[in-house]
Length: 178
Picture 1 (cartoon, rainbow, N blue to C red):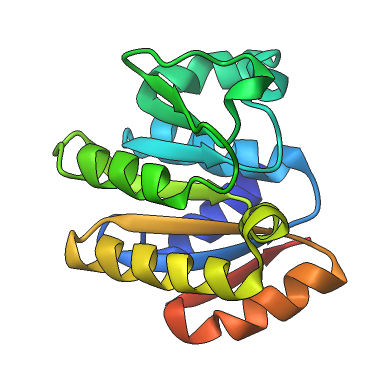
Picture 2 (picture 1 turned 135 degrees about the vertical axis):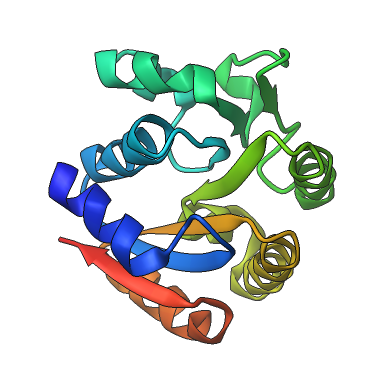
């Protein structure tokens, strides 16, 4: 997985402003990318979890090493996560205005250098493809304007293939970690 993380760094040029669509076939690939960004590159970032409860990640020792470098936004408060200094949860997966406000607040703090959306397909499940496309385009433009990196996670499946293709004009690079 370390090779996958280095590939994302090389292809996505995340030290500046870049929007990168990353295709993953397992959770370990996402975790490797986050570990590389927060560990090797020493960057703090925002991690938005739509697919997987953040508690699922938190059980791994690798996650514990990187979580202090991340602000975590869980898309659903019903999963048991509470708002803290380093975490927030949305009232529901369809609360895109709330998510936008959180992203705006966090990205204006110079501490954070990247945003990871895990996953775009998960967001589309709750908000529909058109709404998700508009939101992702808005977020991508915002990150470029702030000269921040943005990683959009897409699982390896047919629905994600179509969604990634429809958003291809909003991203600078596409990387597959199969």
